[in-house]
Image (tube, rainbow, N blue to C red; front, side, top):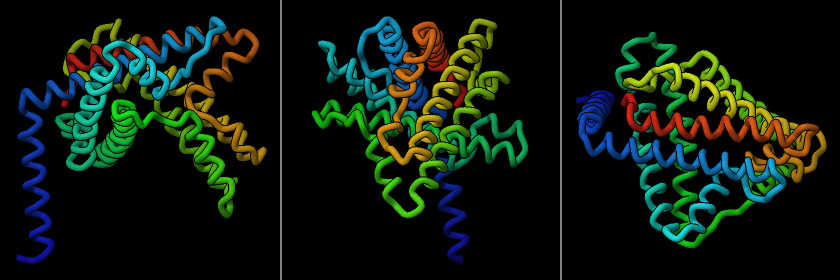
Length: 277
C-alpha cells in the first residue's frame, strides 16, 4: 500500500471514530456542559459591564468573568467545570473542522462547507483560550490583564510592525462583521436541533450582533494603536467596553451592550440543550 493509501485509510479511520464518538451520550453531555459554561461566562461579562455602566469597576472580559468565578466560595470547582467544558467544546469543534460540519455539511456545497470548517477552527481556538485561562486560575497561575498590550507592543517593535497590527485589526474586524452577519441572517439556527422559536431567534440575533459590535470596537483600538505607534491604545473586550462607557451617553450604550451579552449567554443555555452535533 502506498503512503497516500495509508494516509487515506488513517483519515477514514479517524473520521469513523469521530462519528462514533458523536453518537455517544457522554459526548453530547460534555458538549452541553461546555456550552452552558460558555453561556455563564457571557452572563458574567454582562453583569460586570452593567457595573461599569453604573460607574463601578471590574474587568468586563472573559478573563474578568473567570476571575469573578474564582472569587466565589466554589471557585476552584466552578473553574474546573469550565475548563473541562471548554475542552469538550475544543474537541467538538476540532472534529468539525477536521472532518466536516456534522449533518449540516450534507445540506451545503463544498465552498459553504469549507467556510463552516474554518469557522469551527476559529471557535476551537476561542474555547481553548478560555479553557486554558480557567485551568491556569485553578492552578494559581492567574492571567495577565495586559496581554493584548504586550502582544501589540511586540508587534510594533517588529519589522513592518504597524502593518502587522493593522492586519490584526483587520482580522478582528472581519470576525466582528461575520458575527453581525450571523446574527442578522440568523445563521446560528443551523447549530440548533430544535427550539427555533421567535424568542430564541431574538436572543441569538441580539447576542451575535452585540459580540460583533464589541469586536468592531476592539479592532478600532488596535487600528488606533497602529496609527499612533502606541501599544497602550490597544486592548481587548474590557478596554473596548470601557471605551464605549467613556463616550457621550456611554452608560446607556454600555447597558445596551450588556443586555446583548446577557442575551447571548441565555442563547448558549438554549444551545446547550439543543446542540446540533
